[in-house]
Amino acid sequence: MNTSKCPHPETSPNRWTRAHIYVLSRTVTCVVVLMSLGTFFLPISNLPQLLIDVLLRTYLIFIGTVMAHEAVHGHLGRTKAANFWWGRIALVPSMVPTPTSAELINCTMPTQTFPKRIRTTF
Image (cartoon, rainbow, N blue to C red):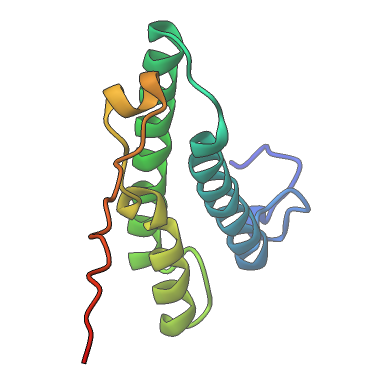
């Protein structure tokens, strides 16, 4: 015998609807993308900061790939196109090139040298 107060759990007011799941999944995707790209703008001056940055960015990349996988199951949109689009957005953090640790600590960027102009007369 069912002794629960709500005889039909599918009509419960606390039940998550598909629209709520889409909003939650898309919000997680947006936050992950913004945080992982935002870490590129934080200055890193010592080894502990570098370690925290690498671990945080790696975790955010992992969460982004998890959200892209959820798009395969249809948890990010109603249509196939919506899931495809949000899945691609979730993969952006894993596609951004990561600078090397020497570039991060020393704040050095690769320099490009331009050839000198050769004067030619005709």
